[in-house]
Amino acid sequence: MTTPPPDPAPADRRDDAGRRDLRRTFRQRRRRLTPSVRAAHADAAARHFFAAGLQFAGRTFGAYVAADGELDPAPLLRRLLHPRRRLALPVVRRGGVMDFYRVRPDTRFVTNRFGIAEPAPGTPWVPPLSIDVLLMPLVAFDDRGNRLGMGAGFYDRFIGRLPPRLRPRLIGLAHEVQRSESPLPAAPWDVPLDGVLSEAGWQPLTRHRATADQDHD
Image 1 (spheres, rainbow, N blue to C red):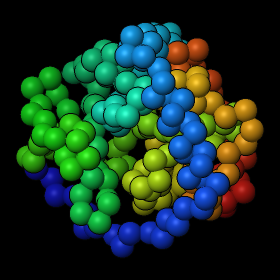
Image 2 (cartoon, rainbow, N blue to C red):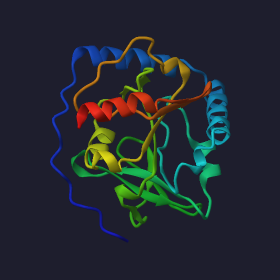
Image 3 (tube, rainbow, N blue to C red):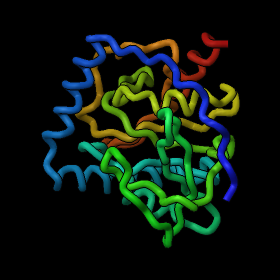
Image 4 (tube, rainbow, N blue to C red):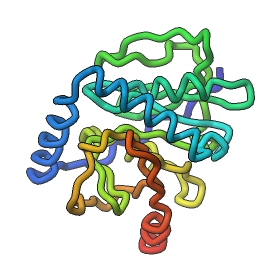
């Protein structure tokens, strides 16, 4: 097993009352969806992913295991498991540092301290710079590509470790009820999404991402 890099110092991620209120509102929206509706949304999002040709966007895909009403990527991931592709799922280590580990059909899972399944110890580590596409969970998103996460900053820190020009394509997965009609607040460490995949279809947001990258250069 390749050894991952040491933990960097956790970044300061102070959350304000506005973000906390938004997070509460949008989490309630997705929690109100029934299990059957969530399952239908997951299947629809998977169909849209392959119809848009996103399976050809790279060789190595990072993803997540759904919790708390998040759009479940499982139907999509089952189809991504292919000898010519690599699929990686996250493990959150001490200090809140997240790394990705390769998943195969026979991979063993354990339940982490958050009650979420993750690859068991001994699973091969995937170097961050080798991830071509990162499928990300979210609490809310807007049409500018802003993403509101759970507030722990795991994905922010992971992306922040990578040089801007070498970051993976960032795709948010969500239910349409998580779409914010007004712009979400963006913190200095936030990186805009390249697109959003929901039960309604695939929405690329590359124009906004390119503008944001220029603003941060």
